Amino acid sequence: LVRNGHAEYNAFDGWTNGPGGLLAVNASGARTGNLGFIANPTSASAGDVLGYVELANHTVYQGKKLSASMWVGSDTSGEFIHLQIDDGVGTTNSTETGSDGGTETPGTQVDVQRTIDASATRVRLNVVLDSNISSSTTFGWDDVTAMPYQTLGDDMGKCYGLARLGSDLYGAWGNTVAKWNETDDVWEAVYIHSSADATDIIEYQGNILVAFGASTAYIYGSDTSWTVSTEAGNDKYAINWAKARNAAGADALWKSETTTSVASSTDPTNGG
Image (cartoon, rainbow, N blue to C red; front, side, top):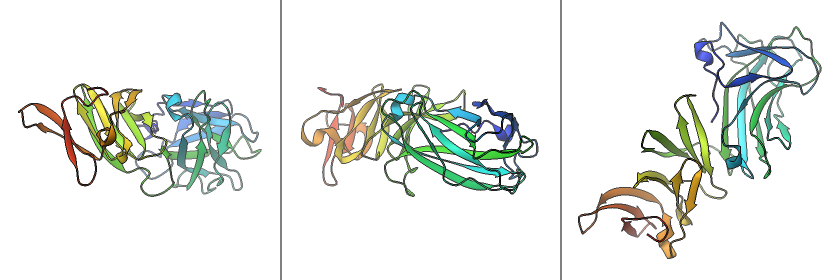
């Protein structure tokens, strides 16, 4: 869910200089295994922001958990940087501060988790100074990632499928539905479930439908506008989707509602 700034192509699209940094691309970093971004501080106080990237659709994240990570390095022993999640109401820093092995190495991975405030005005990933440092220090970072989650673990980024609506591509990862931004080369979260992981995703009759299993209602919609199914009984549940003709020969959307039942509909929207 984060643009890596086209560091492999010597650009930092999507990233912005913070008030405390001078952001650049590491000329020797692209496709070498070295850190892609470098910054020389223009100020030297703890908490100063060297650079940041902002996630789209901040309201989608409100009240949800977010985990982020990156690889970091410094060319001065004992001077480090943090990855920080900033939601406009508060911030959380990575507890690790990273390597002083320089910017010409893969560095050290750091990570941070935060529950985004219900009144968040933004979701921003900041690279911040750990302590007062020398303005001659060069810091580096690369491979920044962000992923909403329910429980930290190996399955939090598992892909449950892709679906296309017109020219737009959607995907389901863990509890998150994301839409591909072709202009900026990034997946942008458009829906985050509070309590369930997706099990499948499909397009049908101009909607994207996302299943969440045999005990959680499916959703349908597009972009950041989604409706939760309120159909009666098991009709609102779905584990997997398929499109095929029904007994009348009409195009229909089929779904497994439980591990032992299958149903179809020609209109899976509420009241359809």
